[in-house]
Length: 330
Image (cartoon, rainbow, N blue to C red; front, top):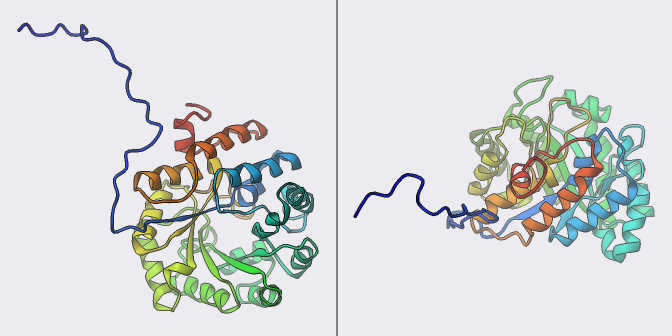
């Protein structure tokens, strides 16, 4: 039989990957909770003001994609985060659209004044945002590392007494742009104090994205040793150095099952210029889908949501999976 002439074989279209090939790792959890922070943590650092109606639509679209938690906004003073100055209007519109369910959407509450606003709106799920370092606490909260707990104690105590769910973020867990390396025991102390004040879940923030998988494992080991099990912990990764998914994989193998993400990779931090976008919801979903880990979230619906949102921003979204699946630059 003669050898085929190069270029003479009939061309066939290459496979278009719309879903990953599933290879299950039995050592990993069977189900993961994806905690969407795009409407709050994602939008708060946007330069161009996003209209209220767009924010409301964004929350509703993310819920329709199957995300079980969508952090709607922050009841912070408009002077500190002008992008979220319309928080009350956003929440009122969500109640009109979604009914009582909207009151269960998590909302960041910075202090007692924010808690009063949450009461007035009938909210049932709040979050507080603390720091593992003194420098960031002073810049973000205008409090020292120790003084922040005195501010959070009445907020968390009153919220729990009112039957509210309380989540606590602790930022700068893996590095601080002003202080450098952050000792593990310093993070453990901050996390334990927040849990002792009444938080039901502790989200560990790699605010500037410098963490690595070994560092994640070491911190989780230290937190476990201090009495905080994996099932009360979440990882909030930023992808500054491209380590976010590797850090998620390390946390998954350790037993953590809640991960914070932002649609399209939207986000940053207005008080830490070196903080780039959050781990993208699409990127995490592609990895989890490939691992056969259930989330209840539709990756195509999230991609559609990011594609709808992008024209309302003044920049392209950074999620690799989003771009590969039809987003900007694909």
